Length: 582
Ligand code: SF4
Image 1 (tube, rainbow, N blue to C red):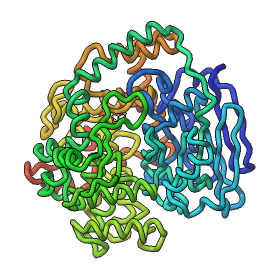
Image 2 (image 1 turned 30 degrees about the horizontal axis):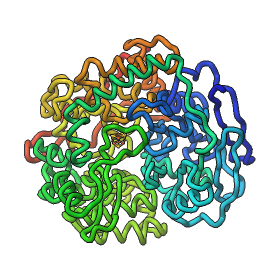
Image 3 (image 1 turned 30 degrees about the vertical axis):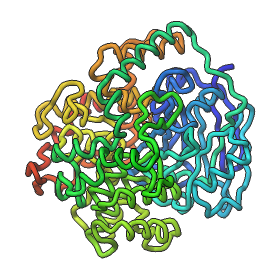
């Protein structure tokens, strides 16, 4: 049975199961979501209105036995950036969608009745759309538990909390992981888009699926072995990440002077020792929990973890570097357990760690909160954001909007999206990616930290301009292609360092689909995706002046290196000028 497009129309609560158009056949993940959004969504539409669409798609290799291939992409017009958005996540949804034959789930329209929320249940044969008044106002873990009980645990679950229901721009979408906890996707306010469509949760049948078909199973197995070995033998993906999780980066980035601290006032944090991966691993060793955990089945890197409190009771899981940086260094909270408590709350209510943490870091420049006040941060999220009070909605609007409301100048956003955990003045290749990716500030769009700091794929001095334009361009093209396969970002390390890794990845795609793709085809795929995303953004009203970092970074030297952001507009425009002219 071939894959199908599942299309839900929330205007009249109907669905269709359609053949996959031939032009979409070779696409998956970001390649597919961005193509569908570019073809079917009016770039000038209101992102929370009837003409936006929410598109879920598993990667090309999702559902196979390929290591680390279980990511689901989500695309839409972003209410935060005003441009196209793709965001992806592990969890259980990608593998199940792929095995069920769901090439993409497209949700369009808005229901007439604005007071009712719905639950979509997707099976091979149909989509059931039911009103769920009892779930309204509930948070993610409660919704998850109810859905798992109802379907005897045999479903993938995607859900929004109350900030998503209230269409807050910091809201995201949570996805069940293999251990029954939650992972999140949808930076750029895609939780608000799901809320605007009045969808509280989606479940996908995990009982009646078939294993995916391989055109050449033996070739696939061979290539898969080479690929897995490459992941396991790389010092970062094979040792550093499994031992300390992504939080291994706190000390590394702090030592490089690139750990944004106290609302991007320094590249060093005095809290680094308290919040770093080594401290976290020590706590896990003493208290129980686990330093290795995969966010989806088939992950051989296992950068994730479960984290317990001082009494050995479970506190949170998927406790990642970005979260720990945002609250520990940028908002200045010293207590790792407090950050873990906030992480669990944020998983429950469904808000993005980067957007929320950076918003609170900026709020610490006002009378809303003081730097370092973890209790206040927790209370603001639990009693203001989750309940939708006026103050909660101000925070829920994200960093850029808070800056405007309070007349602040030092607002760390690109295309209105909060800058993640690498200071662009001290990690300049990453700054070029932030400025020029169609996504708004997004580290995963082209992870130049690899070559600027981690010596992966060579070394380019992070404090100098030389080589950064080419680095950010090449990494963005590669990332757009890799985001289409369903692979997680950390395959980038072996892909940059081991000449066998990328060919093995391409061999797996060819063996799965019976194609003859070459490395050039993969580069072309990445370029095509970025081209169509940039074209969408242009039509949506985003221009060259949006491909810039915040002005304060140009004139405010960043300790400890006292460097400023010194790329000209012309230099930044040169990243994609050849594509724009095509
Ligand atoms: S390495 Fe980390 S992010 Fe990647 S699949 Fe494994 S747990 Fe998820």
